[in-house]
Length: 271
Image (tube, rainbow, N blue to C red; front, top):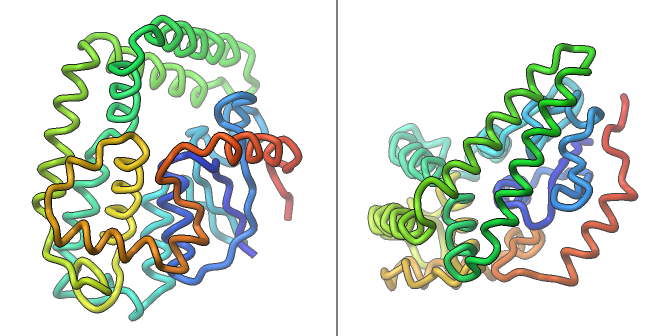
């Protein structure tokens, strides 16, 4: 059985969960607390995923440490049930997926938060600055040389710079323009099917999760197309969408429950 290491509110975990659910791939859920206990930074998880990110999909002879790879794996498992198997449509599907991953969901989410609650900026600076220093200190003591810890520390410094070097309002404006352009460029969907035809594709997965995040951040007004809105309303009724726990709003109770569950979940299950 495959194990999916993920976090309940994590955007890219949602991409993985939805892709696997819609492809009919069964997994064992391994929840991580990435916000409070920061289990993704533990040495145990670092051995599994040196990037120290979620999601990770693990199974016999399989280790995927990126949502895009899990998405591609799901499409392969789905075979002809997804339109990715159609060579004629593959380039257009690839373009939608590529454009989606070019969007910094973190910048969109955090710039919106900082614009609405500017007093949080010092907190963000303190947290990210402290994380990078802690990772650098751990790297000095790491038996393996700590290269992955230093890379993660550098990533945190870059995240902090992206959120503080430019006014959050300016970042949010830029992100809105990028997302709006992406949504405007989508193909005209079939109402009760996929964006590219009578079946789903990787494009449907990433667009659905993007719209869920826009809903959660109160940015769904960026979606101006009625045809995509109708497709989105229908997509939310799918069994796969409902079983994948896709957040369209922040769920405080579910967040707390996920944190508690994560702390009772072993990080690494040995073969």
